[in-house]
Length: 309
Image (cartoon, rainbow, N blue to C red):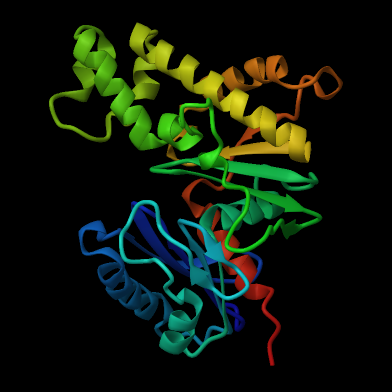
């Protein structure tokens, strides 16, 4: 095992990951758990203490990086808020981790962290600039320009999930997140009770979107409709990204990226209609290459960039 190891942490709305690995992003050890959402920030901090202890055992890591699921001031490491778990507002995450581990730490938004990983070692490697967005329990985004995360005025930037889709207040996250698609599936199934998708989801509420890929592959009408709506909403939202950043590549990650080519191609086909002619057809859309490793890999890379005393 490399003598220079680092700790990388992902704090998401649904899952937690703590890894030990190299500053290049190579993962050597992993701890994973479902986030204890009911107990909020205190419960999740207890989980992280356990995870860090497990992956750190017998190692002498040099630094720590963390990707957090929400707006965060990357300069100070203070969390602005979590849109999914209570208790994080104004929490000094970086300072807490440094006191806990006695290691220098860097704290970033999780989508920024994933964007760095995909731009460095994933689907955007070799391209510049790279825009990354993820469709998970929430929706986030990050831009990497010249190999560096783009930062705006603290406490955040590239909040793709909060782009407005219309003047009524509908956002990308309210229509395109995993939870939003779960809700949309349930609404349509309640009024169209037949078909593969309707039979697959059952009576239990939650997680409906995990059945979408199979149903769509079987040409289920509801599944086809939902993927088409999702593709169009995302293409419209990404047109704003294109007009502002004109990235060389757009990378799609998160759980809903498992829809794969139907979603990727659906976005790519619809994007030209929403961008100005001189930018058409728009950047290529690629599925993220690192899967659920994107945030911890990015966190390791960030940790490896910390200057040592």
